[in-house]
Length: 162
Image (cartoon, rainbow, N blue to C red; front, side, top):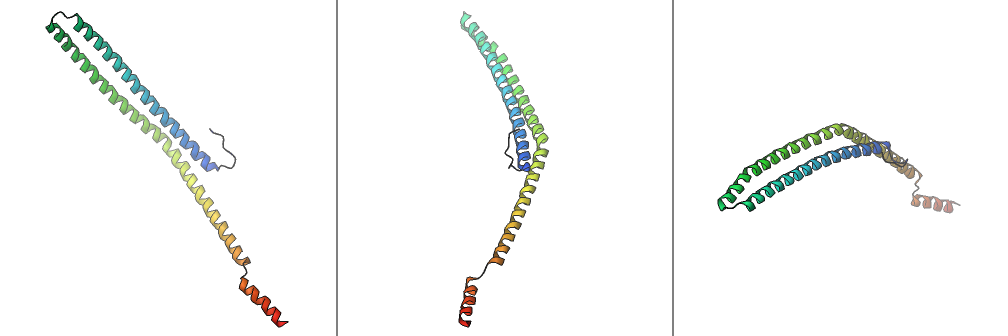
């Protein structure tokens, strides 16, 4: 997917690729859901504007106050029905989005978990190897270490014996 330098561990690379694939699919799903909600909001806005225009026209053409009240009252029920339908559709979109997010997560969780375990194993193995190498270096350093006081005594003893 992305170019990696050769020094990158394959376990890191595969885990990174799995994470990127998961986040890409999750992002696509969320974006699609957001677009559907935006479309629904646009449809509601258009419908309510049309309803308002119709009600305004009836109010302006009413000759008596009773006609104006009747016109306003007659538009209230269709507007509330449209709002109820909007809420139901919004609830369906939310449920669909939740199902889609669960599907995407389920689809990627096994691969991501597998690559995370492989990465953890690789890090553990590398840490163990590094610890072993450090211990060997310390043991070699201790073997090669000469106590400066013992060395001075040996040279002093050699001088006095001569």
